[in-house]
Length: 267
Ligand SMILES: [Zn+2]
Image 1 (tube, protein in one colour):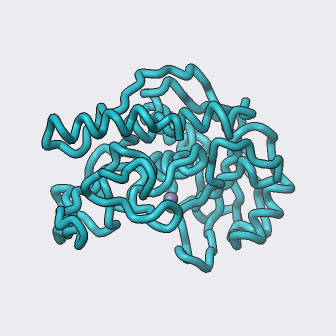
Image 2 (cartoon, helix red, strand yellow):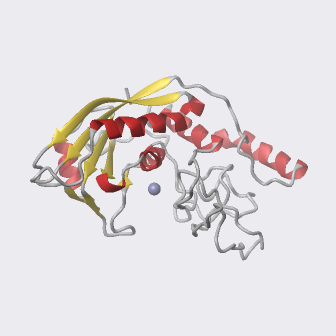
Image 3 (cartoon, protein in one colour):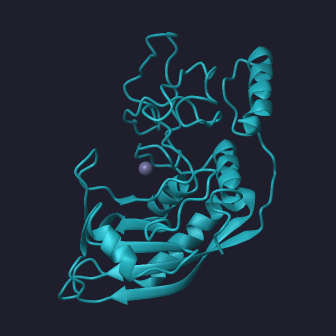
């Protein structure tokens, strides 16, 4: 929590001196971690090895684009191994069952393991997600098989999907998070303790966006009466914008904090 004390002071100051509630430069630390994380890819293929091919080049290109999104903290990712697992009996992954088996069979320790499957089946809340990752925190998790396992659906794989799952892995919540920390007000007053716990991502009602990347329809918070202006182009939102998707400085700082603590064991 100490981490956020200066942020709260800065926020108070900025709301007094400016009408802008949020600022992408807010909380900037210009901090460089100078760390390269090692990534190992495991591609599960079906019995004919013919459906949803995914090439090493596709993964490398996505990682190159992801690296540009983490450049603000001087962090990048390096694909060290690309393993194809042909004729695998589980290229459809039932979350909570098959993922345990796969991570037990194929795993490199203390690096980020990406598992690519044809289908991911999850009963709740999202029946067929494009991916999922273990949530990072400031505590080092116990050394289980799935500790560093990110599962991805081949047909919707992209640099943004990978960046989104890495965001969770390094402790980011969705911009529209309400369950874990409570509902964030569009005033920004409670931004450090509610929603995604990040102050330069505006409160997000998780609606849909128009072609100009605005919330559509406009929606007001019933408590404050303020209209939401969610970060439609943010990597941790669920909008589908036609814009360059980004992490804010506050999100990069939060990930950096978790890279240095709960994920400090990574090579
Ligand atoms: Zn997510």
